Image 1 (cartoon, rainbow, N blue to C red):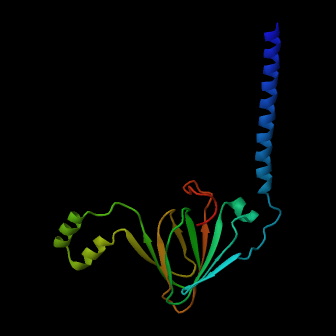
Image 2 (spheres, rainbow, N blue to C red):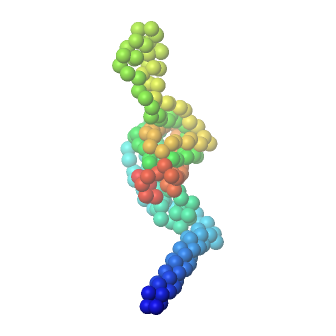
Image 3 (cartoon, rainbow, N blue to C red):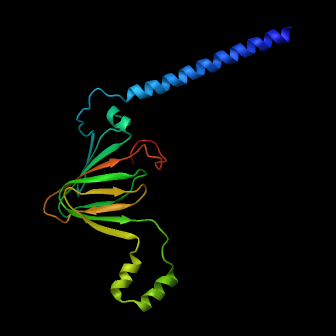
Length: 188
């Protein structure tokens, strides 16, 4: 009789614990859902500015509610004429919108590099222009202009050079909530 009473107590305590756990879990999902329902969207100003020889890099605090709910971070780069944005990469995929100017973008697309033997045999069969193309097969260089949108995969190194007469202004939108981003939501 004592074991039946204990088992009833245990069963009722287990049921109560399960009910409490599910209600708290639903509440946290509800709170998280309501947290991202913004009444209005604010025009945000950059929080950090870093000046360099090539120009200016401005970043927004990724902890702003608007940016956290969207799962993104923002960077605005201004590259002076004849300025070079040194090679960099992000663990998150990004879209770069060119607001002003024109220039050149270099991407180093990961892949299987050619072996020394393959390169040597191709050199003996092809002209000098084709040799250069073979050696640089993983380096993609493209021109960009005002209004272009450039997609850069996560982890892909890239650089930009301003060959125009006016500054290049570009806004980078980093998708920090993407599954390929294995780090936290803070941009790097």
